[in-house]
Length: 282
Image (cartoon, rainbow, N blue to C red; front, side, top):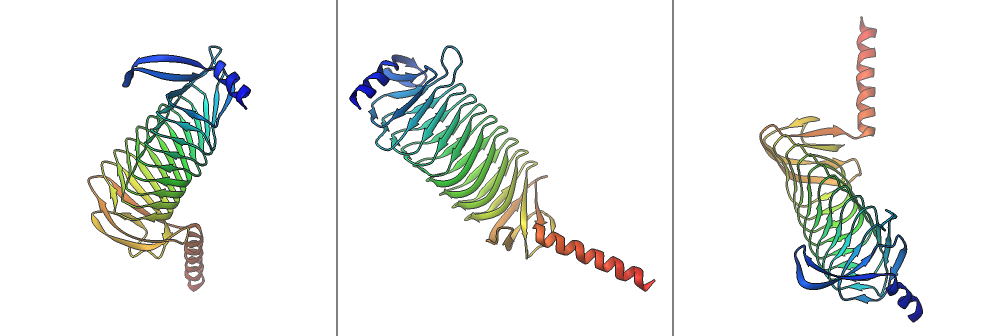
């Protein structure tokens, strides 16, 4: 193992970085050879993962026993797979990089930026998750101890896991919630759209500034269609989970109630039956 680690370290360039908000003379370990590196030991520096000079993506696997004392930054079209270990500060995914997270823990935030793709099926993130500028975030497990914030054409899909505080989407984002839990409220602003078919939301539903929240389910205490103003919405989501949330609609935003597929089929049959009966009476 010592020889393997020595070989790996020889393939890694260690540079001193000034600026970018890092402390002066802070060392950074850079993986940029187009290869695959498995980290199961401690790195007491910042870590960057980049494409090679021939534009070949580099892959970093952080596994049990691995530890990064500062931030892990992924650039270009390179990749990071985190299945264990820990990052003392944040993980930042930029450009068209891809990050798959199935375990481990982050002491800071997770940032997805500039068309990056992040998939989370299991992890503990101590702070918030930020999705910026055409990034894609898919969450099926794990926990985020603060908020999820999406800006500028990002796409967020949540089918599991937990977010302790709010989910905020502002600026043409697409949010899909089919499972999991959000401890705070859902806040949708500025042309963003959110579709809810499952999961639980602990706080209110807020739609502002030309945004739309679409809710799929049945048994609502309001008729299917558009909600305006404010009130309390109760019913059953398409997943079978209960919704019981205050809602607030401001300006030209709206909340739309849509029947789940089974209910929609039943309603369609009801309309067909009513039409046939009317024809038979003629």
